[in-house]
Image (tube, rainbow, N blue to C red; front, side):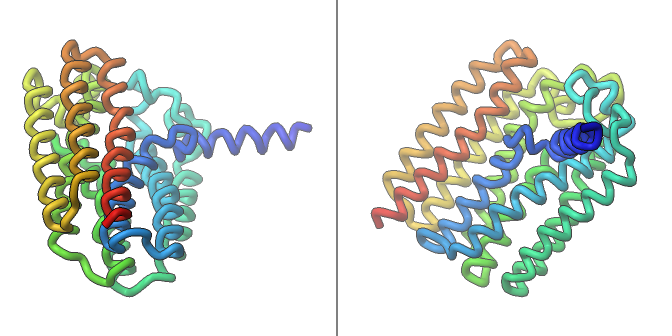
Length: 291
């Protein structure tokens, strides 16, 4: 009985370390990748390519959480939202966390090896971005930009895997995703801003200060302008436009929701970007389906 309990306890630690019990990050990686796959295929993508990218999104987001907690292991205990994370509490060692990170990366890379050489080459850059992001919050106020690059790198990889090249519209979609991350991760950083100021962690929420919502608004405008450009580049029509219209309405709601900048409202705005990504995806799918 004690062995079973021990195993269960270890499984719970790994679950919390990889954040598989909190899948919002998986969806924020998954939606742009799915946008790209459907656009690259002009409809339903190759089933194996789709499997590889969905599985890779889960594996690499989990790996990203592990390396992020390794980088933050000495500061997470001072932040209200993160003080119970396994590395901060000492439930797991740094060495074990790094081994888990390596295993997750290798599993993901094994899947990528079944695809073409361009995708394999781009995947190396993706791993580099995933490792680099957690350490940027100490060196720059723009870690959200690096997060966007890490999350969005699945886009050129998806085009490469599905169509063996990355068109200009694909890079436009990558830029839109990068700006999107600036929006939702700044809302996320606003939740931790007081703690981050005390421990010296940098973010766009701190950099922009009292102009945070105004700057988020600028980023929202740029994000949707880029998505409109994506629609034009791929000849998308009314269903895509309707999806963008609903997403823009949610963006207005988020500005209203966070008007007092309280933790709960900012976190809610962050979480609802899963809905935004899903709405844009449905617009793309319907538009390509009726073409």
